[in-house]
Length: 284
Figure 1 (cartoon, rainbow, N blue to C red):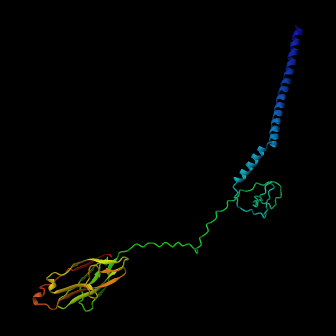
Figure 2: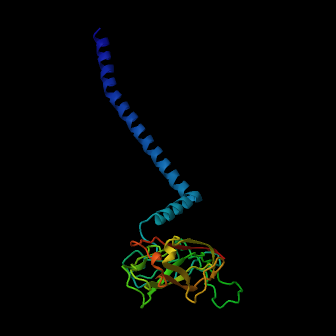
Figure 3: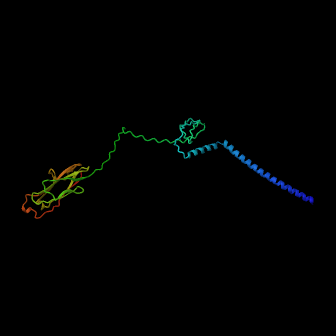
């Protein structure tokens, strides 16, 4: 019984010593395998990058896009004094004449054999249209604007007869210059009142007389008064008379107290006259 207990005690002690050793070995083995796997994975990726041309193309593409997206203006000249002309070492026969703008503050001249990324070509301005020759032999006549015809007939230039009686109110034109008003008093036989006035065609259309509207003397007034409206030369104003564009004709207005009257022909009281003489023109 004593020997059996001792043997179990010995076996337990041996197990207590061996088990930590196994645990250490197991952990060390896991660490070693992990390091080995990581090393192999990194080495494989490095090797793949070195032999994968697609990775190089992606790298160059990223570099180009970084340059294009930079905030540096493309047309700013460098403060450096370098004017190096970079010749491309590619197999193409195109010679690049563009000047590479340096972003560094150094004055170094780059003579390396690296292939710099050329800048994007500057768009050419569109050619301006050539002005036409004013001395061309074209037979095109200039366009003459069509003037709108104008209709404008009016009175103008009132001239009083110096030998007539002084009027109460001198003849004057209305606002449209198509009518004349005046006031005069004749108190004795032989007195008269007269003035001249022009009928003017200021428009661009030839005109002719279409109608004459006359509100003259009554039969009783005609016994002691004479009232006439005629052309200056004494001819009567008639329908159909022409007044050309820009032409003027002088008209004489005559009002006289007759001097060869009988006593019974004289008016008993003062007479107020309402006279009207209107000429209607139309296009010729």
